[in-house]
Image 1 (cartoon, one colour):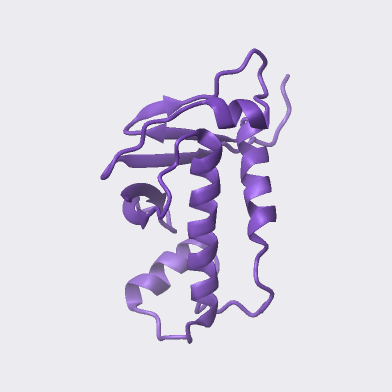
Image 2: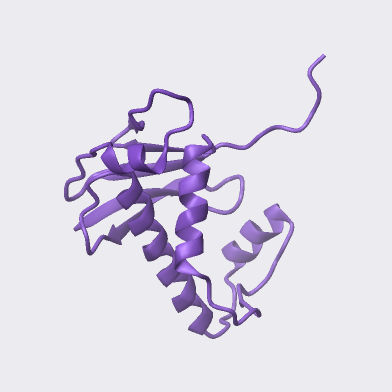
Length: 148
């Protein structure tokens, strides 16, 4: 099933772009959505480890300069990521409220009696995902500073 995922590009002048992801297994609940998405992204990262360095375009150099690091995107660490650990971290981030999920601009929330949903509640919260739907993952960032 082909689903569109909104992704923020590097650089402040870059907006959100939509990338298509092919889900081999149709996620039926929040846990499966997180698990399948992480597996796809880890596979993309692993494929990127195999790529050779290529020259950067002028636009790519400008975009990278805006964030303060111009590099070729070469991954020097040849250690492959642990998919199970990555899934565990993603689920924990969602449970802790650090990640929000939107399907077609509608928030997806686990049915829970408490603020932090359990893994079983994530597995029991049914979602409906159809071909061509748009998913947005928002990672919330804590601001540094002091409350007066």
